[in-house]
Structure formats: structure tokens, C-alpha cells
Image 1: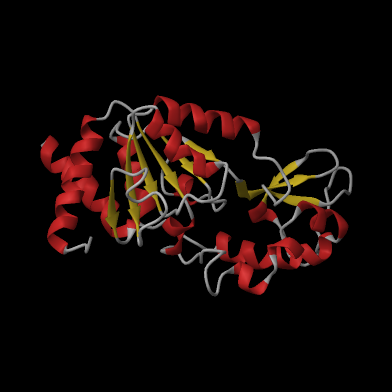
Image 2: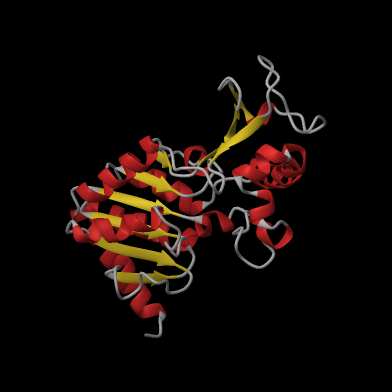
Length: 256
């Protein structure tokens, strides 16, 4: 179906009504929500995986065998992420939480922009670039304190290599994040799928699980995805940074 301005406005009003009527709404976000903050989708043209083969640089075995080499890729990623700022989509989700209309954000992103945008209940499915963890003793420190002069960085306590606290290929999803995410999906009335095609498992299982449990699934994406017309109830096609603030304003208008 061709998306016109008229039916986009109707869908925004529909989403505002659905969120206002929902007893428990959650959001699942992906790389698309942070593109507007200047962080390219790693998988897209010009993204990080164009420059670095993920099997060669982003697998945990590659990190363990040659951490200095992998840290060259991490440095590029860190410079992108640490210099980015939350955009209107992050801020709108935080506003929905403040209004008591969003229970949690489950994000596949590792950039920390939801928290910096004001969200408090954030489940980081793939970890966070905001922290470094020691592979030897488990020591943690903030990434912002890192000097890139000495790569790879070493733990001040045991001298083992420090690694970003993110899930590399070949590593399991943190059990607490996965279990909490699936519980949120099972118990929600509505899930907003924002900036993700939801094809990378196990996070991709969240919208179908919510749907099977009786929830509505509302997509906000630039293009149709494998969810569109099968799992999602409807797609609002366009920029999350434009659409989410309009939904918030529509909810406010009806509440006034």
C-alpha cells in the first residue's frame, strides 16, 4: 500500500489512541533509531561492516586471539558512539515513560542514547559500549575515561585485556536481559517496533511472542520489514524522529 500523508496522519492518531488505551506498552528499538543521531547502521552500505569483516573483527574468538587488531575497529566504533547525541525519537520515548505510558525500552543498540535521552527503564539486549569489562577479573570502568593512546587497554587491577561490555558474535545474550525482555513481551498489551527489521535472533522473537500473547504490534520504520503484514498490526512508514514526537503530541492533545 502506498503511504500518503493523509493515511500517515491517521495511523499516528491510531497509534496515539492505542498507546493511551494500553495497560502496558513496551518498545523494541534497533539501529534505525540511532541513524538520526549520526550512527550508521553497521549492516548498511557505508556501515562498520563495510570496512571491517564482522567474522574477522566482531567475533569473540577474534578478540581473544588478536585483541590489538580488534581494538582498531572498536576505536572507530567508540568514536562514533561516544560523540553522538540523543535525537527526538529517543526523547519522545523517554517522554512516554514519564507520562506513564511506556513500561520499558528493549534496545538492540549499544550506544546508551536511550538513557541519555531520559529513559530510565532500558533493557540493553546486546550490552553497552558505555562500559569496559576486564576479561580476567571482571573489573568495570566507563568507556569515556579511556585513552585511545594505549591499545588494547589493560585492566588497572590485573593487567588483563579490557573489552567493551557488548555482546560479540559467538557470545550469549546476557541471561537477565533476555529473560526480562521475553517477560516484558509476554505481559504487554502493545509493542512499538522502532528502527529495526527484527530479523536478528533472539531479539527478533520479541514481536511474535508479544503478538502470540495477545498484544498489538505497531511498527515505526523507514521501509516495510518481514514483520509488516504478518506480525505487525500496522506500519507507520517514515523517520522515528518525526513520527514519535507527533504521537506524543497527539496523546497530549487528547488528554488536555
